[in-house]
Image (tube, rainbow over all chains, first blue to last red; front, side, top):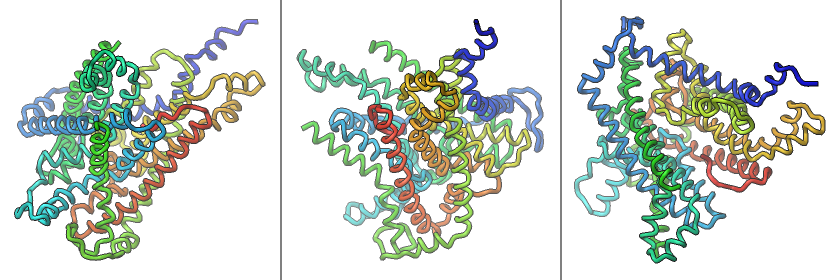
Length: 293
Length: 268
């Protein structure tokens, strides 16, 4: 008594899988894919007063990219994100290494917990606290003048450096966790082999540990770079609004000036820049992964 | 030797991580109106202001409505996706999961602006509901990440045994699978709740005239007079999120213990 083809089809794994995932998939199509497609479409439309006219044009991109202010803001965003990524990943690596190689197994999750706690407390307030720390009469300057190290408080706010430190702090756990995961995967006997074969610790680290940890490092780079380039809050609070990044101009175009096509073109441009950087890193990642096999 | 220098570095790093948070209560209980050293004296005035503030109360209420809804919605969507991706093989699975997990790697401003454009285009008025829609989209990938771990540690033979003993698909899910993944569900719900409660830019774009807690905080940070109260608020939020996180961690560990999986640590 064979089941009818229809019944067999309905019981097949593929259909079951699609049935099961359909609510989430439909949600993602309606609220993620469709809006992204709309954003792309808008970026090729024409701005009428209060309405968007569906006349296809590339004028928005031409306007955005020929505008020296937008170009410099985009460049600043890439530089700040790049700087933040570099600082975050370089600072995070030793911590990930410490937890993976020097903390006893039973205490590892406690350390990870300790590192993730600050990440879960109010983002806005954490960012603002850096203003408190770096301010003209802030924590660092009070310490410096209090110790008599300087008479003139340092002007630290409203700079790319201040924005970078703040973001590096905000994204620290994002860098630590992927590096930690890839360090955990390293077969410890490989390190012993390196030492047995006469390499010293530093060389073993350089030739064995670091290359094997590279996928985690590249993961960390991506996971820090992508969200920081779209950060809105830090340039406003720490940059004093004088050093806008790309999210600030997109927001301004879409909500304040209400030029949706131009705003969309800027958003898509920013996304393309992010995607280009991400693809380069993915490519690097693939090379490293192949190299480690 | 190397051990101790690394340990010293780890200590300094923790100081860097915790400095902004430790400073919150310092200024929240300081009677000076300017956020600077030296400290003046001890006061509870800022907390009194905080609890008497009605705009803040409304913003908090809105944020709680959004966060609870987001938490329920994204965990429900997460259960479907995690179950599908751990239990079934189907063509195009990588692409489907890629789309669903995309918000993890999309700058938030892109999510905010694309949703804003489409909501205005279909004429949906901006409200708390639209914020819930946006937050659910953002929190679902995190929920899936937590739930995937819970679902993939399930032993499939338990499920097969239930079928053999005559249970239906639904009763197996309810009697066998659900109890085993409940700790994962709770920790996913708490995580989505926390993400939503703290989210600013999507709420800022999609809330219309409504105010959420982060929107309120952002608006107050411009006024130096309000900063001590914000410090008090920050102190309360830190305490609340530590309690939430500890609860989530407890359930995550209990879930691992239940299914007998090895603790790999961490939330993400």
